[in-house]
Image (cartoon, rainbow, N blue to C red):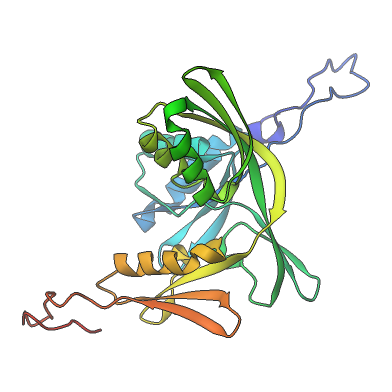
Length: 294
């Protein structure tokens, strides 16, 4: 073998003169669970990023393919085992290859079934089908949380807001509790661990493993700037949180006066969250008290 890509984790190495009759069992290709787009801040660094990912391909769990964004230019859609894997790979790319990168919001893998029976596997919100959706399946994980018993209420509140289902709870000691939850993967790939740490003053620990998938009421949220959708801002969220997410994103992009269209949230049309600039913002001529309109 002259290239590390010719060998994968789990391959059986045997003697060429006296080969094994069958491969060892129990090994399988790791499947990425979280996808994120990686784009160089400087577009001229794209070839460097491509070569850097080629060098990291000895990581058997790393899967990537080229993609293009109208807002971010040329980059790669990369699959990771989880958030920790994402952070390690990005840090290595920036430190070892001197790259400045932008990463899009991590997303899970969804299976979308349309009314006509056709199915699509969605790893990027821009791939979400435009037809009438009959069913969307999302991956779920079996999570185990260890924390002091004083924070049980705060942890339960956090997990309920993330659509978690309590599987069981055991007191390991008078002041230590183990809580087991079933949580959608999409609800924990962004800021769940940070929220868990902040609510328990850093004492809680989280461990999770895949636990199949489930049917969920999910919709795609598009962020529109000047009436045009920006694929880098698109995301797939639960229907109950879609409008609030659109309002939040619209408020963050004040200068462009965006509209956030929640596609599929209403049977009769799209709901929009519009942001109006504050009254104290100045217009380009510097006149105070005018509402800036673009």
